[in-house]
Amino acid sequence: MDFKRYSSVQEFYNDTYEILMCHEAQNMILLGNLIIGVEGKDKTDWRDPINWLMATVSEEGKIILTALMTPPHNLTLYSTDNELRPDALDCLIEGLRDENIPGVMAEKALAQIFADKYAAIKGLSCSVGTNQRIYDLEKVNPNIERKGKIRPVSDKDMHFLPYWLSAFSSGEEYGKLEMTIPQDSKTAQYMIDSERLYVLEVDGSPVSMAGFTRKLPTSIGVAYVYTPPYFQRNGYASSTVAQLSQLALDKGYKRCVLYTDLSNPTSNSIYLKIGYVPVCDSLVLKFE
Image (cartoon, rainbow, N blue to C red; front, side, top):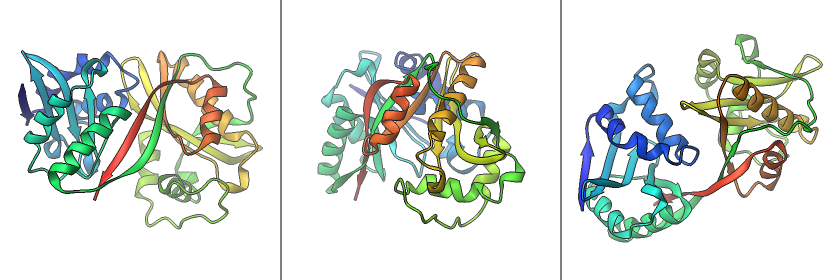
């Protein structure tokens, strides 16, 4: 069994892209990051591949395990054809013994086995960060009630957008009336400039948001779904995601992909009604 560490993102892409595409929706984050690294158009924050950890484990010339970490984010794993190979994980962990890995994200069983082995060798403890479910959609339910109309965010939205993004990123509890005061507006300006975030307007007022994340040849990620507490329970999130998903399909994408937190039954119910179907469960584990 052979461990390989990569310094070239193009070589890593060449070796792993087709393998990852066999489960495109499941590997949305891995594939999206690979494309970002190869294109090299955006090297802000974590997006510069010079700082990435890229590795594979092979057996008889065939890659059986792929690993990518874009610091400061967690290590992301994929086991080829979703075949669990504890021996491949042992090989990977040995190759990464000197690395500081903050956490791992992967299909649920794979993440748990890696975390148990890595924590034992490094003398760490691990805790659950997020218990996720991956969904994809190929057709929007036509019976979803459409409220208002989505539009791209713009500079005129800077009076509220930093607050909404801060609340989304902090995972504030559904129904909580207080909002976190954002530390700066850089993230909001980045989302405006990247032209991938949309707000739903009802009677001229923004009431909810959602946006696109990673773009693949046939799929696109949907995220940033947030409705401020004073607009919740009006069906605005459902309408926003439904309209955004339809927009993606109209642009030629075959499917939309999103991740949900299984601890939030409300959002999972919303996505099912829109037409999203479960792909697999994914687990984020953090090391301490």
